[in-house]
Length: 262
Image (tube, rainbow, N blue to C red):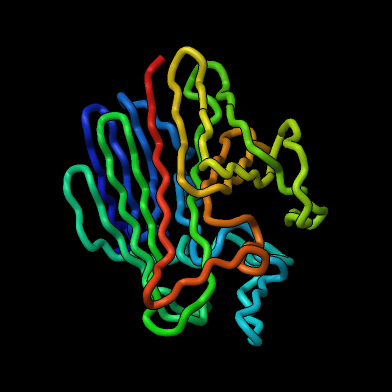
């Protein structure tokens, strides 16, 4: 159902899961303090079956060129699943499992499964993409909107990437890797040892976003919120770093948010 609302709880942590609104996490509250920007387009949504911008909405699969709708002209952005209802497969007080069946405009049948698990100080998001038939390229990731302010000083972003993807005027990576530059950012970074980004709201809270994946987009150009987006490849990755989903090997990834009070 479009308006289904699941609330997970552990200690004083609460997480809202909204299956009907793109399978997104709609809120994360710690001691009643909301960490995520509120609104139908915000919270934290899954990016699948691709992440970020897809150049001209096109990608190649063998000899075939596939065209996706240009929802961020002249490109397609953030996949198809964030605008679709998901199905609740299982739920408990501290865990929810959602599924989404890939369908038009995506040309390949398959299933996405997302698990949302909460403890008193950790939120873990796990996602997999399986094929029902032929192999196909895919990406997955998450796009959280963390509030810039929790009522005190603005958040700071701490991370040590190995490189930054040079961004062209079309907002897509040029293919060159450069030394990381100071923000503000709408940029993709490489962290070969795994994504590890620390958000600090001084005197209030520290939250670490980690993942075994080596790609993260950091977006902090908006006044209200900052985004730290672990993903399985860079923007336009269906063309430049395709990951193949096969009947024997699904695409799987996870991200963990761990917090401590200051």
